[in-house]
Image (cartoon, rainbow, N blue to C red; front, side, top):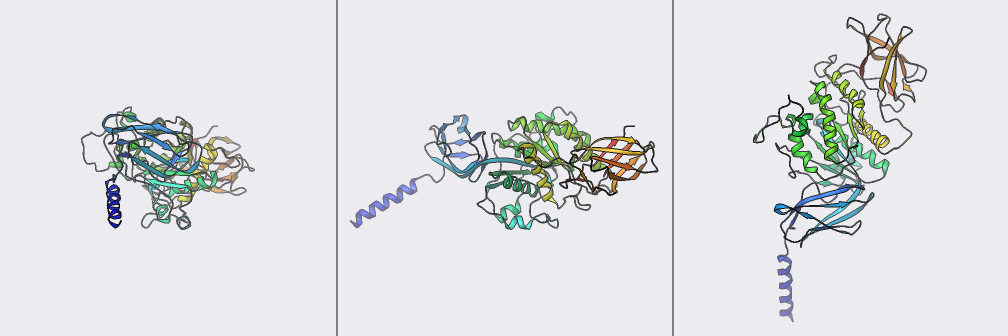
Length: 476
């Protein structure tokens, strides 16, 4: 009997060790345990199989068998239809072997992209903190349906299907501390308010230019933008080189549906605001086409006050003006203002909670239809000379502006010779109209508000969202 037990044990051990150590199915790394998939969407999974057998998947939300389309060299694609929000679920991929993806949630997925102000983590950069971030780090709970994916910085001269390095992570103090601050504070408020699972993809790179996040095809209409040669192996500034980040960091997300994009970028393009105005609409349209969502919401951050070439210089002011004008020129976008969130000395302002939550206001009000609050900042509408004063009317100020019953600064008037004068301002009777004046300038031709590189604002709506800085001609 003992000999029989020994033989049976040996057979069992041999059977165990004869099983494959790795699945014959290899999915691209955007897919994995703990991920969030966009609800009510068509998700196209892609990968490779070394088996010659049929490939199919079964998702536990409906238990339907869905077969893959097999292509050359073992490459395959299969499409799953997601339900309304819920989970956790499991997906099984079969090709004679089985690959299992566990702990999957269905909810809302947002793509968080840009340069260093999007990349800046919740724990801050060295010597540059994120104000009031510690409670968010300490309160992170793994059980909460908020999941994070950070794309490692990679570039390529040709569009990639794979090559992404990253993984979906549940919440922990460490994972939250290392994730994009702007992205996390956006997703945190979104998840708490909607009470559905939320997935955040942080795909950002410090000092990146908008051209790097666009494809060769999109940039071909700009003859002065040089597309890098495909055989170049090294770049001194990959994040500033056209197409490289699109190819290496965005294109591998093909087939992964998202709800929308939040975008914090522009500092690297500030020397040429006019070119940025031309590039931004093309980029937004390309991303919408890529994610197969022609009306996909795209919310962006107006760059914050910073000294740049000098506190009173205008290079960043001119760029903010371009960003403001884009709000009226591009369909279904929204802009977050940051006049109260800048830092004179640091290009990375510490008030990321304000920025992330204001992005969430846009999504909650504009995308998800919540009512009872203003999510858009007060924005210049018109200016006219009346009874010796300039009356400046703001959109999105119908519920009132603050500070009421006070004379405040931040406005300037420009005369016919181009001389700029400081001006006083006062809100008219709880209206969206601000009275601006300087007795030395009876016939100004232009009015400005916080139109300097670094000039914090003092005009807000009732929810403390700052008015957008601007320069505008005056109607006589």
